[in-house]
Image (cartoon, rainbow, N blue to C red; front, side, top):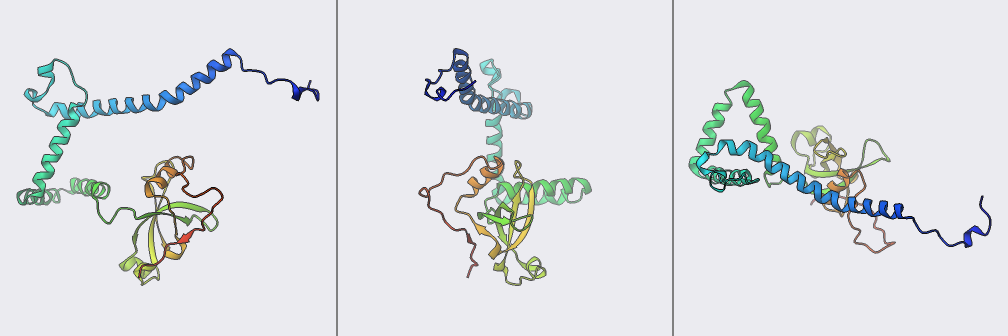
Length: 237
């Protein structure tokens, strides 16, 4: 039962159990990210070692000389081998060998489909080219009044722009709208440039926003209370 005089009473201090519980939860918040990161790196190094080290001749493995299994040595072998292959592939002989090997793969019905798909994904993810996302944006999707985070990839060209009724290449933009929390899947949509709202945040910050389901926002660099009206992406001259 409460009375009008209860508000004047001193606030009760939390008990010993409540303080221990609060300290425990604070410790979990501090330890969990560090522990999970270390566990992930340790497991990843072991996974790479399990694939790479069996392919390395025994006389080159450090375990023979130091007597213990050094976790992560397989990553060093993999990096060295990858750099060596890339250096050879840049040369004239390496390019000739690659073309010859690809010509052989193209003759294999099932293998060529797998190889072509994996090669296209690898080139899209790892190759630094004009195919990287240019900027983050907002679009009204899946209907008017509902906004989604997207990434502007390229300007529509050729048949896509012509069939959509936008013969001017600069008037139609291809926007990738990712899904949450897995941004590697999503929808490729084409919007008129006037319907695409450019965001000031970077592509990385927008990706964090999508992955976290809206929980992680980029730091606001503007003063409190100052608002900026969204602006559509202007057409290039």
